[in-house]
Image (cartoon, rainbow, N blue to C red; front, side, top):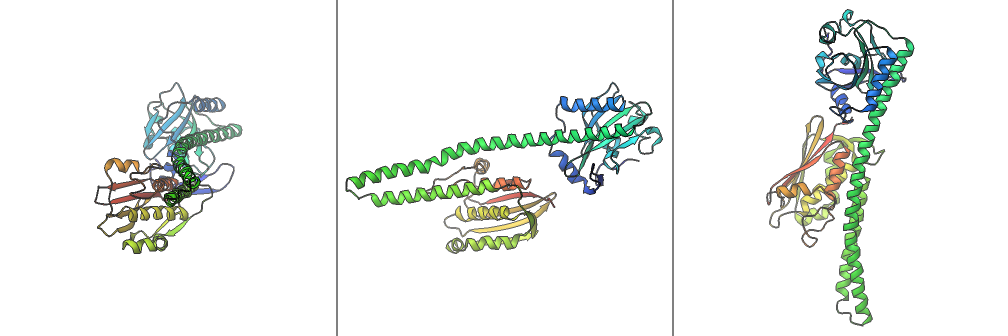
Length: 413
């Protein structure tokens, strides 16, 4: 009897906590993928745990396995017995450990257990008899694999050995969590380097311009020649406004993804109407038509993030309009499991294929301030919001034919 490779509910007893959770297998696999461990190179820390597990349990083989929707993959193993590093789930022994309601699955003789007796690893090849495994359970409660020990002879485990196997399984999870944290830290450091560069470059621009204009104004005032003073003051005011807008947008950018943001069910049509209310004057000036089409009406997300997202995309639709064409913007939301897909389409100036790749970079601007006012931060904020919801953003566009911005939001509820 084999546990199906997909579409089951994993029933897990969390170590030392006594409570159980049920999760669908898609969520379990997503939890595994967050560690980016599958098909990675061998690492001494994992190999050492496999060796220690085998020695403590007096077994020939120690292994660390991870199981996705189709296969069992071994991150580490210590064995002189021929066991493939990758096998289909239908031939996996460890897949049974995922559904084990106790802390550790112990099978003294696999040939006498109906779950294992017909397995090819038992009947052929390695001819495994003894098998024991502690599920690898993430902090979120998902069983993503197992720390297992195997032998070609019949064995059992005493209480201390079972306890040690559980402790070592927790150490594997600690290694995985450290791996995930390091990857996130590397990503954040890279973002910080980019952020520091563009801030020092783009924020200095208005400051240098204001400084130069003040010097020119000072010269005129000292010479009692006020001919251009009004022009200089106007330019100083514009540069100040530009810098103020940039700082405000940078604050928005920095706030996306902060901890303890509340996720809740959001009615998109109501949120679109709120955004339209804040843009009422601009809508009247342009005669724009903005409509929400559905068919999905609600998403589970951070409300302030989705508000910013819609504001930025709708403002862009109004800003980058064609001179002789009345702006028409439509917002649709559909389901593409495991995501919601929000699409915002306009009939504006559009983009070239090359520009479509650039626009989501912070401070990336395709036009001068004389053509279109802006800071080049709005779409970078949208990108960060999408990533904060484990999704992504992209644009489909043709020059002079409008654009469609697509945003995927992970269904985390």
